[in-house]
Length: 623
Image 1 (cartoon, rainbow, N blue to C red):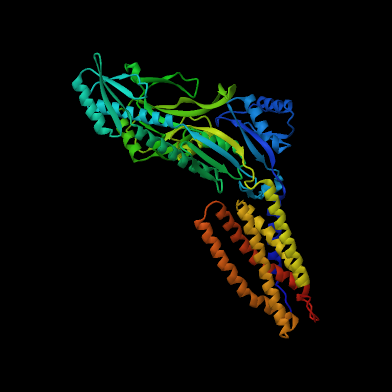
Image 2: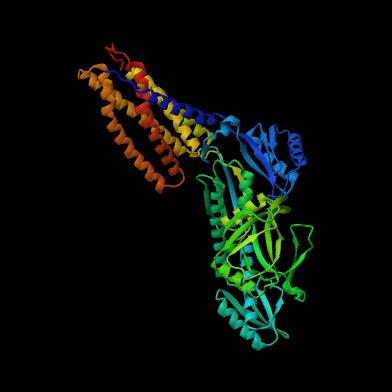
């Protein structure tokens, strides 16, 4: 008998190998260190003068630029040296100011023809070289203030419903809100209403001359609970936003009382990530003030469209963006302008219906609220010396994006128009869908994450791995000669296919993942050892050479299959219950098992068939 594969099997193997070669190629092109410039708002356009100013700043500092590229929304400046990234970012940020986001980045160098067919390099985990690290501080004081503002609006609505007349007063120094009444009886009635409807508030009464005052605020315990809730809500919203960014194996966790750590491995568009993570965009729905409304109960806001005059709105808020359960951007079928369709939760829908049912014919405004990052310079005394420090902060901007007449009582579904662009509509929908932040956050720290084990340790790990593989290659050649050489070729193809599959599916390679690859290669060699040992036994039993090759592969197949399937089951379980690095190990192990079965069973046999399978006069096998 002869050992030959049908032609279609050779073509199938060749097709898989060529495909694996192409999709593993991008890993040979390392990324360039770079800084990325974009506007602090999605509607900001980058004029050519902005890039010229950034390049001039870098040139004056002696930082070599490799290339600059981009469009009117974002610009990427590639640098020659990676250790100048942080300095370049600081200089450009100072030169451009707070209207622009300057972030660290790794610019890909993959050729266009590879990216055109969907071939991208494998993402590296934070413990190797990829990704960015953000440390954010939650402004919990502002969260408590916002919650008290909402409670204040609800209390005033409750008092109006009970027909208890009041006058607003300035806030107390400790932040408590105050309402004045004409007599003690009305004040006492209001106190009972407030205490009954708002059990989480501390309510106090006070006589200030002819004023009968009720003050209310949160207790210390309640403030701590609200602060914890704000951090937890921000944590959840950030996780949702990271999911929207499509980052694999991110790390988002609380650190200390007010801080949140975010690590995004393999992120390319760090400026976009920074803007999405830190942006506190929200909505408020308010009624337009009546012509005879008291000044203390109204606020004036400008439109985002600066051509329209300012509008006077009621201070009371109907609902905020927190009540949005889903949001999708699309186009108005009549005007063709971008819009955002939103659905409210049950409570939001009920409040909206209550507010609009009795105000048909009046106008309702949609306020768009942005927290734009600012930096102020303070002089502080540190160790006896006066030092100028940059203190991050936020500037809140509120603009009306829509002011429309209420035609009928509204329910759970809305659409928001008046947006400037499709990008702005998409970003607003993303932020509302991912959950608004309970409080603004400051970027306390931003840096690229280097290898946690250190560059030297990683180099030693890679060197020891290559030495181990070299010893395996030598062992296979010495012990199994030509068959060992064929097994080594299959081993190389296995590694190439493993990298190609991981690149194709966007898997992230970590240090535990490298351990999984090494283990997989060992198992692939083990499968070949089983086959070759079986062939030797068949020859010793006196089988003809071709029969010995055929039986060797057939009878070893069951052992190889069983051994790999049990290991694959372990890998699946690890992926299901593990997190972070354990998942990375499970992914490389599982993919490696599948590719090693392909190479150990099909590729090596095809090579053996090509070398020995067609020779009828084969008397001795070099194994």
